[in-house]
Image 1 (cartoon, helix red, strand yellow):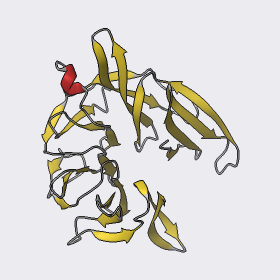
Image 2 (tube, one colour):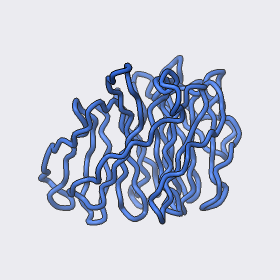
Image 3 (cartoon, one colour):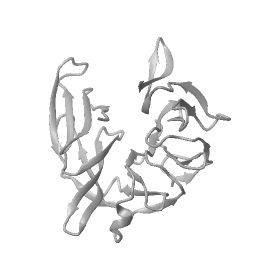
Length: 272
């Protein structure tokens, strides 16, 4: 179970986790707890992966990978729903399809989604496509309509894309890949079209990447080394990834920027 925790506009925390049959949700009864309601099951038959993103407006976007059996074999698509207020019901789930709408075999090879909301309020859903690159779909923040899937290119991308947004709303995406590199895309200015950045020297395990804005305007990316399992950190102004230990752990690192004893810090936690 991968638990995602977000704070609503009213200060209450909500936890989301993919479970059999859909998504389990727990909600604080009041800011700071200690009591919670839930779990409440949000039914999504066939859901196998889940990511959660939140915009400056506090709206929570749930994006999942869904696999179902159909008359002509397995059917795969990405689905999206929005929660506008803490503890309230979600919108209906909407299918986003896949980057391969006319090829079911290719659709079955897509990866788990990542999602992020930029400074314009636009939600982007990103996924490893069947060709080993990255595809993205954007929701217009004013109309609420979805643009077509776009191909961001890339090769040898592994599962576990990691997206983060800076305080001024610039999106960064890290995609672990083969051949000792991770691919990176970023928005050079708020609202700009994302562009491909330099490759990051990384031999990352699949599904191990995470990221957080570690200082104003700077995103730090974390992943586990494929051989040692050790956590490494990298940011654009660093000459090389920095080893952080944690070799006995599994999965991505949870990263949170927070004041500690009056200092601006990033706190990391991982499963050992």
